[in-house]
Length: 270
Image (tube, rainbow, N blue to C red; front, side, top):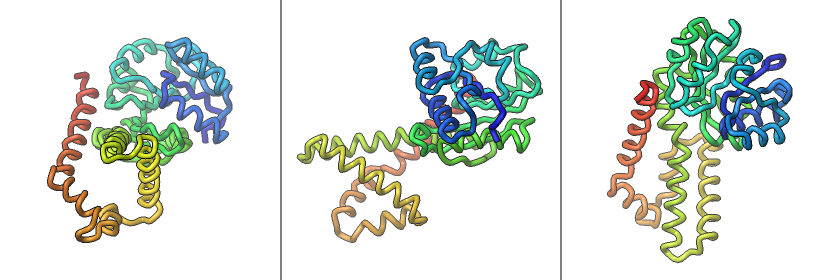
């Protein structure tokens, strides 16, 4: 579906690299069809050397790209859009992976252009991402198809209404950090009970990979898998009991609410 389109990335960070690597790996486009604007010279040189893409200014990219992916921090989106004023052609599709920024922000400056908002996550770097897409007011089915084609090269894609994307940000967008945090805590706890750190890390990481694979492949609910491991009066029951007594569920819920609220704040310019 992407064949024949020139795809421009404004921002050349990790998420942009994950998507670039994906579309090139899958043969969706050629390196000659990928343009990148990256303000850090060393990073731009890395992307040119590693992937064979063309790096250029945002103004030049705007004049050449059929699809523009905004892979920048939300705090700089106003500056980026100001640089593009009067430079975008009528048929360009805008795809935003800037956290918290609503499609209405793009439509305010470019009311005639279709916009698709995306919430990806960092496992896209290893081809296991979870991305959620939402259309703006003028985006059509085929525009969502283009966005889906880009993101599917780096993982799974789901379409939801835009009013759910702050919640999505708090769950799948921020979610990898929660898992990394728990992994970090498990490794520290393992060291505290006598294991060497490298041994602890190997145990915890493979346990996490195995548990995630079971969740995906078994089709069973998390509660069912947890209960299958939790024998009455056993070691797992003792550990889960502490988590329940200390309010682990409410801590997780509070973290998700905080992340959702911050996503909404970013979208409002706070």
